[in-house]
Image (cartoon, rainbow, N blue to C red; front, top):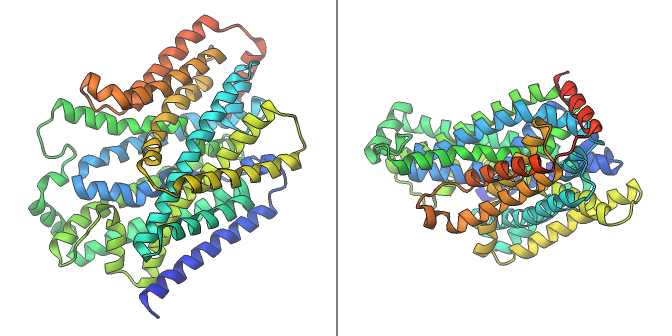
Length: 497
């Protein structure tokens, strides 16, 4: 059996497993809420692994190891920031958001939660939030389609479009069938595969080099700054800004719809504690594996006759050299898993934004069965638009997606935190802050470095602008509401139980 045959067999096995899970979830999904939120019956372990897998995407398997390979441990600050942000998200946001979304008229989307939590009768807050989710995630899906096409082109020398169609078709099939439950269960498998790949590859490579000491010695001969958390240079203002910007990635977690929707799907608020332990454990091990893979790659490709053409392929290249072709196929499948897990989650959140927060608000009420059908139709439409946008993989899509993390973090993050922990947030304050945060992200990205002369990550000024505007406007527009006070107290009490 040839190496290529082993690779194809492993991918077929992976694809078959994903579709089988989708069929299983289809049989257990009977209504609209089940399709979008799994009926709030998601076990803690599933929520934890699903949140991690859908969050990390191809960045974990390719982007981070590649950055570490090129620049060294200074790039690891992003991983530190993400881990801190994820921990705080599970610790302080998850239990109260699970409680409050149920108290606030059983909200099953983030935009509907904002409206119900703040008693917004204008419906502008919900519609604006839904549009933001739908637009950003449509382009985000397109970027993942591009990543899938490029992966197949590089790994199997297939045409770009062929690879993209394969990724789009399989992901769409199990998401269309299984909805949120299908996406979450496939995320569990995909997250396990990603962890396996990121642990086994650097460990095997270390053994082949003769151990940790030998690897460190080679890296020091190549470039000792690769082992420094500040790049081996004297601490400067630019370095401090760079480290702060990297750590600030953690702020983005509070506003990522495809991550925090997992909190809403938990069986009860108390499940957040177990989910936090599982999720942060998975995340810490995966990030350590990714960082180790990048560093070990520096030692391996400078101590052997092998070469590496693209730094982002360091995990793939090491696996091809060191592992059996069947295991290589599983590692390749893990890279695909990191892409597909993100796509499936984004399709579901996009579907919920359209059906729950735009169609139902602007249109007529309809039956649960029809809503379920419309949810599946929207998944199909978003996927089709994503494929069309990815047909010509230009820079525009990727540039827009580069802002997505900061955009969601700066627009939704403060709104989530203030909604959960500040009684006096008003609907107009939340809306004004959301607009200010998103606008600041775009303006800072375009003009910030030129005007202020600093490469500060745009989520920091965006987040700050949102909080400032939301607080000021809320103080001007907040009106006492006994029912709102009652709901806030009830949500806090249930979150503690």
